[in-house]
Length: 310
Image 1 (cartoon, rainbow, N blue to C red):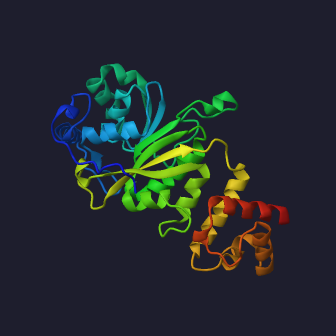
Image 2: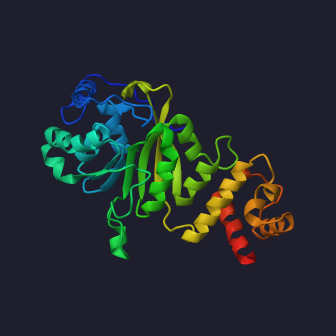
């Protein structure tokens, strides 16, 4: 658990400056647009400027940075990012919210409007072309480098995995997610929270719980707690795209039958028992081990050993 203190909702004071949205502005904006937060889209709007600035600070956002934000909603977090001087690519599925966001930023922070780009899309379907990541060489690196988002509770892990694969240039970020999901993402081998999301996230870099947030900073107030999870990219990729795909296939198979020994759980991927045992031994992994004992490095070792066999 992080030493960061829990963030309580702040209804007044200097941090409710006009540059950011407070509780009153959020509700008025939602009413004017006819927006009612829905569980289907996992919408819970942030209404506390203190929390917004905390997220931006912990994400390490600096002036001139290229930031991608998923599900900006009414613009609370977007305004915090632009206030820091960064450029924002906001991906929003709701057409009303996507259309209104540039106006909100223009009104609250006139000088920041030129640093905002809105993509109307489901985050699970957003493409490299939309993010200007197509091409080779330096062109492939042009685009977002920091992820900052209040991820929808119901699809937070799939969105995170999609973006990590889609944007190799991401060097870090901070996401706000349901507490249970956040602890699973940041968990290490051997812990009770460790699972498929933990292992896959570790492929890309280091994850840790950076802080907790009060339910009161959201509207409507959710029925679950939330945490902030920070990300720092590895210096070099762990392996090739083909190795990642096979490694993730192994991770899925192992955790689908996590109570079984690997010599049993991995047979759907590695083959019959004798071959599976041979591959595991070649990778330096005990065939009697179970999924929660293995790091992503060991899963990759199994993938590489299997590639030598087939």
